[in-house]
Image (cartoon, rainbow, N blue to C red; front, side):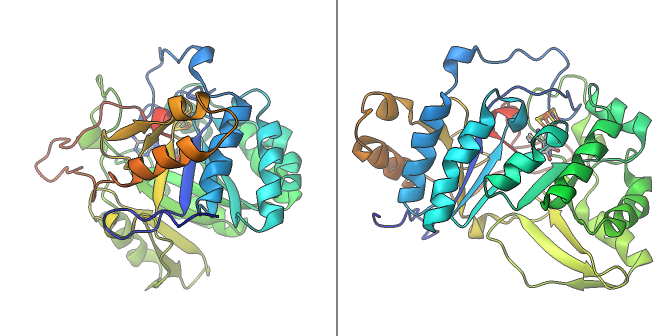
Length: 335
Ligand code: SAM
Ligand code: SF4
């Protein structure tokens, strides 16, 4: 074990999010265009390289790994990678191995994930209306995802639902979605839509449903108690007293959370993004590939990268345009 990773603002970096593929079997309207061009396979880190990357981060003090994408569970052989991470859980070096998924492959993989040591997963689901689900994901089908959630819960995985808050789309489902989650003992987190990717004809400002307003909507139906809990991440939590549920709010735009940021993101090509909302990144692939037998060069490259972690992002909708907008797709950096 080496000295912990500390950035210039004295934040300890203990959380790595890893995008294992940019591909996906859905085409959510706020995330990808229908005609996405994906990276050629040879550009991707191999599963073995992903293992070496993650292992080095774990050796440098990362305690939590979240596997994401694209859709992480469509990457061929991905269970091999999950199983290889089990050793870090067993040694106690890693506290948590988790995944963010659209749920489409959970029916197939839920048991394997549990066996690999995964205990909690996030499933992204913006609506429980079959037609609206098909509209927002373009290629997704709700029954398949619901079967996946059933399989996950049956396997013993704790499921949290993440929903993107979209004005005029799921505003009317606030109570339905909340009660549905409560009936299945699942927490729910709302995410504000972010100005990522190529907006094309999408009206991201018009779609923006501030989580301040989501919270107000909850207050009309429930007794809402603020929770002090802070995961070092962008989510703030409340409890609904009537259901006992924890509701999260990820507010990159209406509330700035950067001061407590403990995370960095690795893309499927080996680029390390120090902040989701900034272009600053370091390409770790040369250090990885040029030194197959030693971690030293990679460790140094990681330390150099962390020494450039910016203070925060610049997203801002307050002037009614998507300021601070990033041309990168969420599926590239890993949501
Ligand atoms: N495919 C997986 C999934 O959908 O859960 C993992 C990757 S996806 C990029 C991760 C999360 O990012 C999802 O919850 C998705 O809803 C969210 N996301 C994608 N584009 C977004 C955007 N423009 N604004 C806010 N959240 C977004
Ligand atoms: Fe795929 Fe997730 Fe993006 Fe939807 S949000 S297109 S499921 S990567």
